[in-house]
Length: 394
Image (cartoon, rainbow, N blue to C red; front, side, top):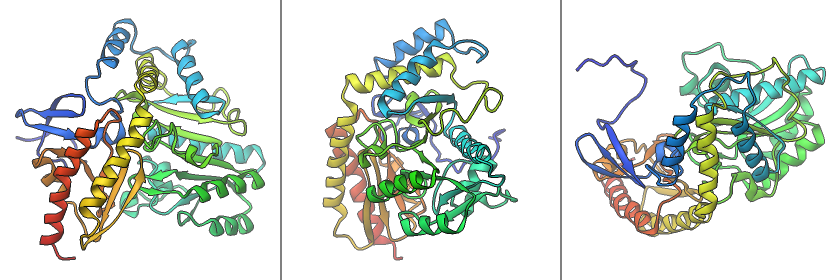
């Protein structure tokens, strides 16, 4: 059958129909364990019995309202995000790309307000911040950028976890105004920024009066066992883009800002049609409430430990296995060769996951996952990887 969709995705031959908890079914009736959660989006899994009635209630009341008017649900969610982060103010949008684009705008205006006409932002190799022209310019993936030049100027790229490179940039480039990075790189292969690096970056930004902007779009909202991944380092950013898991499937994004950044944008500087709509706000409010009620951050930490232990036990001695990275329920298994073929093989075995950076198996299951389901992921994945490594030569 001819498709009228643009050919932008290399899709698997599966069409999902419905889900319950950590399981989904396709249109042919086949069942899968969801180890991807819509790429870290379905925090509460599928059809959550506390979330569904709340969203049904909100749909019956109001789905969308223009930002011309006061927005009580925005105030409620913003207050909660500031309470959890220790930051001061929030701007709501609809996607992680928009949140990251807004962060770039904040950094540039922060520079202009200080009299810097050509502000620059430090960004990182293997980073992924989105696919708009500005965010793909900040992204450190040549394949994502190919064919879309000229890229936006004003980004200085360095290697992750290299504080000396940051200090050298501070010494040689007077127009730098911000550092922009993922606390844990997602699309780049589940590459964590080290705790000492995060603390060092915070110190450098304070010394230089730069903005520390931490992209928590994929690693935030409890996924690592803390509300935000940078909290493991005991620091606070100046700007924190959020999205994905905040709405449990309803599109939502947010920019959370601290004292140095919260007043940079003024009326007329930035805006959005759909951002902060009542449905998305209700989804965010209920997601955070349910996470607290059901102890899902502690569950993410415990289940992540269990999964890493099972995977290490099953794969650790294999030739071709390199390492397991990540924290909580954000896990990457790196092999020494391209393993893209495992995507379909895992689905055929009843597990949804992803392959990123060509050689990294990425697991991002819903935060509601239980021990039996964690064991099921390992029971499916370990034999697949064993057979793959045994059959394929690098």
